[in-house]
Image (tube, rainbow, N blue to C red; front, side):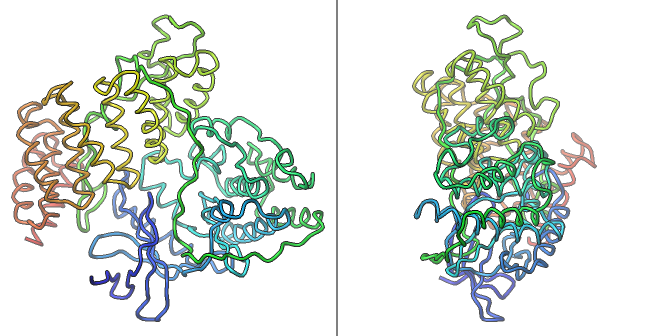
Length: 583
């Protein structure tokens, strides 16, 4: 099997891992003759034009590439692959284990060693912050321990790009290490220091500052609660070190150490107080510096969801399908139609101690609903706080509580964490099946939402499986012409294409189009979107002439219905030009 070569130079030899942001490969630079790591990033899928997203990527990567420090993984090169359109970073390939693996395999290190690793991390952060770069996703899995005992920080310069291209409202990072201000979509260097405090807490105690919480409760804890001192979980931690860890975990950024360099100095002071210097560490397993590690999320406790809500959301992220990613130079949101406006998730429910709450306290009441007029990141925090109150007042199985659990998962996805959304819906599903039955409309809605966010989190095969299993149930319960059923058919075809089967996508959209036209009408935005998707996958399946014919027929209809300057119309115009060049 021929090796894929990027830019005529980098041979991709071994897939090291894949995750929500893309793939990581061990590669060989055929020009300099050295082994490197190559990270292929998913294409932009957010609300900014493709050229803006690409420009941001190169700008951030160049800044990160200018960093030169032994504690920072070096960026050698960057580019965009002409074959698939993916953006890529070329980095040094470093042997070692990430600190997440170290903790799982070896347990917490000696106190002095843990502080020594934190000192090295603070040194790297100081260099990056001086250059104006904030990491935004510092965690044990992004800290590589080399066989020589050096800690190297990876993935500088990537988080901001991903934050910009994924959603209109961005929450970037891993919840277990996320500063309170980061949950609101804000934060600068001080947020990295908070994450460093979380990492050090875990290195010292073997547990995260807020241990064993569900994701929504975890976010609430980071925003509102003070963790137990690390010394309560391990003997031998000096009081000054415990105090410094809690200072790093201060809710107010102004109450943390002023800089990473100041943090380093304070850590060195406490290191001297331990009476030991860090012992040399060994990384007995050799892995690429950029190999993604599975995110260690806290376990979630789930409950059945009666979802007693007349305003229950449409499947997935709305009744209408997501836009497909367009090919070639016009990929991304500027080149793809937008789905029609979708109904919101279940409304906010006000806590009440009475099971029979008055009408204004029912799930249908949408006044002051989180996310309605605020940033989704703020909605996530509000829902987390609201759920904490509701569980105390109503219990975990109350319909109001469970409706807001559904909403929290929805807004987690909207705020830029599709993996957390998928986890929430996945763990809710078996309880809905047990309590409501597999054919209850709310169970079907949850299954669609699960598949949607699995796909958005980078697992299109799981989305295909979930939607294929869901479709016959929807046809039985809702009927073949119900908008939710049509939306599932669209999503199924879309994710079949994204999973590498463009022919199946073409067949799915071709079968859907006459039904969408009959049920919704030829001028409905969803019908027009289906036509665009059909043309897109015809081109991807190797039939540019068919794509040209479909786009040619679609363009005047979009111009008439949407107007000549509508983004969807402009997207079709660009795609038509693209496929005309290839036909």
